[in-house]
Length: 334
Image 1 (cartoon, rainbow, N blue to C red):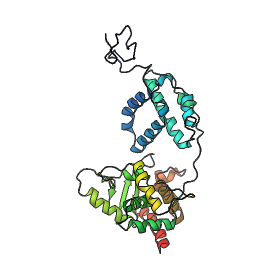
Image 2: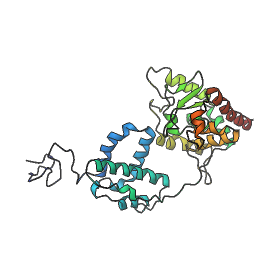
Image 3: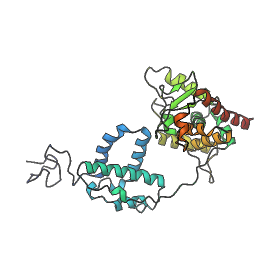
Image 4: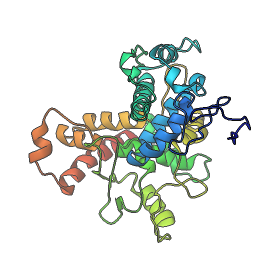
């Protein structure tokens, strides 16, 4: 038999003696030569359909960190090879604990898949140590910066007007950026002024957030232009091509230029899109929003589990609490 890949005559076994190409249709890969990238592609085909878009982005980011091992045979990769990347020894750049955790989680998943396919016998991820650094405390938007965002967002001639509006919605809804970008016509009631959406954790799924008065005009305008004209499910906020906004692109092309134009980011402070969520939690606390409702808004699980299971709060209760934030910022603006 001639190998269809390298045209070398086969002598024995199921694989080409020269390049390892599988010659037996009963299996689709050579467990000795299959690379990390090939394992990743096979694994993600099965796994990505079961997780949220946020989780997919997280796995893709972790995979990119493993570039030095992409073409290595998976069966030859050991914990020390991954640990070298976690410790930043191959790039002289240490990574955060959260980034390291993503890498460890991905590698553990790949090892489990490889074990299922009899490529390896051990999940080497269990030997890894996460000694990444803890990032400094996240900065939040100050009251005068929020007022400046409103001033900027309300002038459509400003180049980053749309970005300012999205940032304000993140501040006053408390959604993670990817959660907000995932909002579609199925998630919003424009008449009753609330959104039901969320992801990542069980507590965070399908949580109801009333739309504060200060951002409702932006939500209503997006709804009229993006959702009403479309018969199919449509995203509330969209890219220029009418697609879902990608966080990494939006952060780089829109958010950071806006922060620079408003002179919010400087050598002492660095706000990111996620700072808006921290700002929301801070405003809730300062405004006196009830602790149990603040927990619901954030999509977190509190020790007070009884509230979550046995207390039945509805839209009117939530609306009273969200109005407290509106009042706080209105006082700052005046």
